Length: 456
Image 1: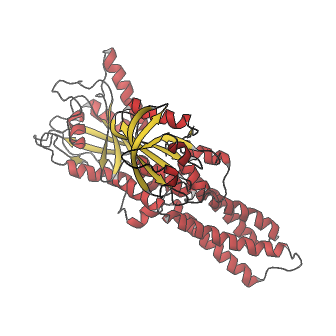
Image 2: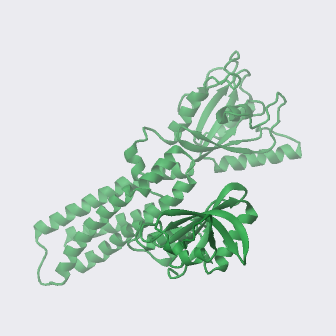
């Protein structure tokens, strides 16, 4: 596949000021050159152009001008894929962009698969597999923290630790395999102690990396927060305050919200999808009952519940029942209408203090944002933590590595024959290598790069 030349639209589809068609491969310059007519007095062919230069002209197919363009020429190996790359910047209309792409494909390139440009960068050794995944994280980053974590991984901070870990394991494995070649010689006790210390250190490093898994996934995917309560408690008003804009209809009429409304906001650096639900109550109205059913469905998918209570009214039997019903879920009690006289009575003890807010004047909303963040992430988010935020694939590989290393360590200390120790060490070393792509299968690579957009 690396022998052919690929092309794709590298910018989002739709109308815009500009679009970019990216071409990569050994024939990139020939393909683009066959379509490019230099503008002005220039007659220079793209193949003769200096690397990393920009050229003005037109894309011409069958003697018909398709678009006025700027063409970037970047020659191997100093490119993203380490192949020749040509990028055609054309006008961003849907039809004009597709016409230029069709011309490029007709001139000898083929349409790139999802993530194929980044896959070629990996296969040519420009980036490792963890860095390739960081490219996707960078594109999909929804918060400043997610962006910082992706940039750290793209810079190779995680890869450095993984490579150090793998080198240590390879050193132990080489020592063990040396003794396999000389079965009549036992491993000296001092040597066993030294190898055991290395494996102990490797296990501790893996545990440190595994400890970042939950935070890493939290930063990448964010959380879902369901806002519940009986009708007219102020759920929709609370959603609007948290979003900083009027998203949900607010009315004094109970039961205004009859369906779930989902909106995303960045809360203290974490992506939060807030789900405003229909008021929880018994109802004979078919539409309202469906809204309540969807509310309960959203509750089952939520990572956190904001249970809104109206402090201007006494606690009702429905309130009490819902307090008990949802006590087992991660929850924050939100006491709304704090600007009015409190008729709710003593605040409930739900494991932590409730948060008082007024959706009328916005008081208490910042404290609520702090409480939401504390529910999902307790403590400071440091730059060092962002450097090594592993994802679920890394987590699974490290768990396998940790198990194999523990087994190898126990066998080594028990005096098990070296060939049996080496089996588990190889499994652990290979599992660590999967993270950066030192050991990988075509199925694994296809699975990773298929999640990328076409053109990246």
